[in-house]
Length: 285
Image 1 (cartoon, rainbow, N blue to C red):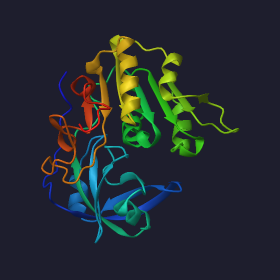
Image 2 (tube, one colour; image 1 turned 180 degrees about the vertical axis):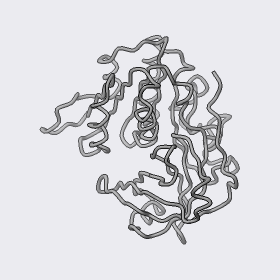
Image 3 (cartoon, rainbow, N blue to C red; image 1 turned 60 degrees about the vertical axis):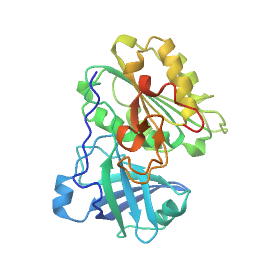
Image 4 (cartoon, rainbow, N blue to C red; image 1 turned 120 degrees about the vertical axis):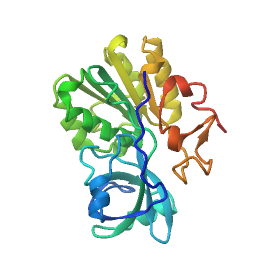
């Protein structure tokens, strides 16, 4: 199977101004920002794949890698879901509609959505790990006739960690689609499964001969979940994982995102499982 082609930034060092046109509060420390590139020519030419990321620059503070979560066929507006955990992301959280950020990108390899056409798709995510897959899910549902059964399995620690509630409910309403949610620290209002996300595998039927799996979340979850799927007959070449590392340059020069022989900012963040199986969950790699 051929790797998904990369759509490189015309100038990986080029920083483009973008205006925040909408801000959605997902939780106390997580926002989704909708950005519009200021330069009409840049806005018209900007293209990306679901699963790629941009480097977002808070002027006077610094730069951070954030996944693009909007539909690739609507590049006029760029959505990024951001958790405020560090100096740069906290500065971005303080911005509002009308404020500006710098955008550099897009970078990396995205999800193999063209390769998955005509096949069933299983999407396994954990926590905020759902964000890098949102664009892929929206892409599939806007072209629903091009794909087989869709199974979305998502796990959170507590119900308060569940983002995109309205999207999950909308996805459930699509034909030939299953959406299974689980929490390992449920409250009294939780009506879905209780436990870790890998337990949801027992509730879905998977045809290994016609399935592509996309997985994103904590590495231990992906390592365990991928092993279960492979045991159920899914070829390791049909399983793709999105891996997070600290990324500073986006073009494989700084070395911060190195994982074994790979630089995830350009060889990933989406990687075929058979290429990184031995590296997942290994400290210091």
